Image (cartoon, rainbow, N blue to C red; front, side, top):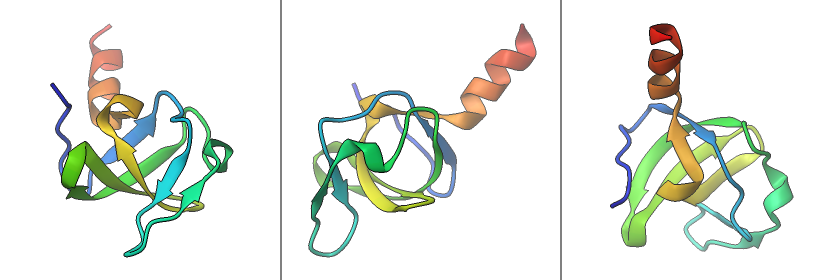
Length: 81
């Protein structure tokens, strides 16, 4: 089951995919080192095939749910400890 995110919410990269796909109308592949683990971005939209459009400092990329987590969830868990 894939995670669900709210449009406009902040997410954090928890793992890097083998390559990144840009969120352009004609997506292009980029090496995974364009972003790094722990980098935060904002969810732009939901795409077909389980992808999320996420805006990072170096551009917008299509990310699968398994590579990102919600920042709000992580902050709530840390405040409960």
